[in-house]
Image 1 (cartoon, rainbow, N blue to C red):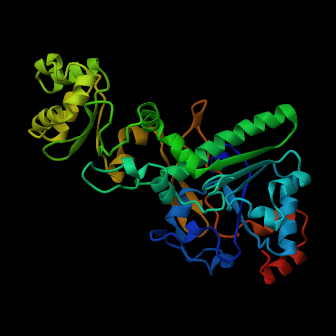
Image 2: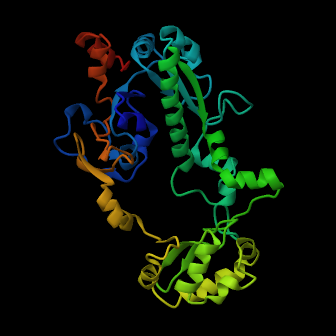
Image 3: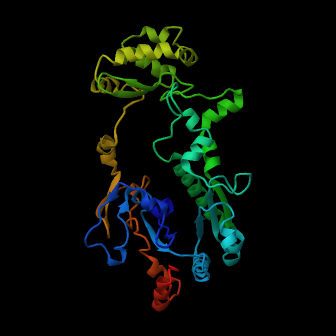
Length: 386
């Protein structure tokens, strides 16, 4: 989707009749208009999940287990700059669409494989799922309250991060191809992405050999750096250095002695005396409501923020000012709101040129672009090749 946002013509190749799994990840779904295209009348409503991650793409369906379907994809490969696939390692090679097969058809092709565990190693043939890799690669172990069970992250963070890694790798591969004229094979996977995403937690273990633990919203190496309760809600405070802690003590807590107290004067001391300091701060904050503290923190230079729900997030003044949502017209669902692309160029948001496609919406036009006649297209459709 990020490549599509940048202007790439992204053709999403889906399974005939069923399509991408996320099409069935509902509720919630967008209601279907009575005026929806007749060709889509057999389809279920568009799932909110699918709509979230498929803007600016075209959709076609192909059964490439058939000789005719394989030829369709081979024609696509010949004229494409990039192929992105997320089959289990080696699966496409058994179907005639492995890297070496495609390289023969198009030596300039950038072939990006996104798998669970990569193209080599004992787990190379294992399917990869965000939540499983979160568990297997350490993220769940460090997520949750200290005295509670491991928790998953609220969104598919490993999936998203892997997509970002793949996006960056593809952009670099395009630059490499411009210089060398040769295509590139990219091996990107959830497992290594998540290990890389452990960041300082991984480094802590590699340097000291000490096992990580769960800290809830707190930071293992910085105090105070966590959520605190107020009289009517919660507030995130991130005093990441001694200067910020001094401001917190003097201007917010109105207890300047805390900044010079040997138990709290340095970050090392604050980490060692975490429980006592957290208790002191909590006792003060619980005396007033959230708005009182937000006003007190404002402009001080101490990082802080309210814990907003999703409605509050989209109503946030900065979200409104930056235009974080966009309304598009969908042929089946009518006007729908989407999250807008997060990057601006020269002060302009990247446009949403196409709404997320309904299943097989663009199959006929892509087939015609590949040189197939209307008669052949209809024949293939009747035989469930497309």
